[in-house]
Length: 271
Image (cartoon, rainbow, N blue to C red; front, side):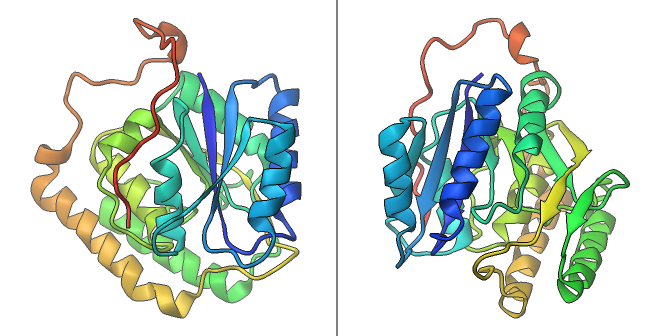
């Protein structure tokens, strides 16, 4: 199974080299050799793209593409989801806040256990370093509301760091969230549409360099729009959008026919 890691990046020259090299080295050391690291340059005005190109020249598994449309976290991720070539994909943050060891664990889940790999920063075994207090309070309130609305038992839906089989990404289209609200659109659609998932504790640390693009005061109405949109799908039309009853998760080794070539790049428009 080939794994793609999509990394949206905007002005991350202070982090991006450490992030991609640390991720690559961990995967190689773990014996995961079929992978690509796909950095989506989202309107950077610094050397982010140039740094990734330098590493790409040394290792073809590292790629950089430029979001040619309007900018925004959701648009950048969506652009990457239109162009990854793996059998499964992990959305990973450019600031090294996520752990490469958790990517390895996601890979095993997606290969052997479930359609989706969801990490939680708020389980007993989770490790969180330097989470800003105000953002933490807002996070816990938002995730409690989401849990009550969907009754899905997952306490960190807003976390961007998740993994999906390629079939889940195709089954959850179209994506309409242009900003950080995409972090809840994809997993909630995956749950509503009947894809299996496994939740594991993960590690997270606050960035050391640069500033987060997430501005809470700008995101409230966007999250609410996405939340209500998927909730109404769940309440009113989930039988129309749910995956066919005969489609079930099959461990990669048990698939009836293994792919002999890479999947073509996705070309679904995402503006």
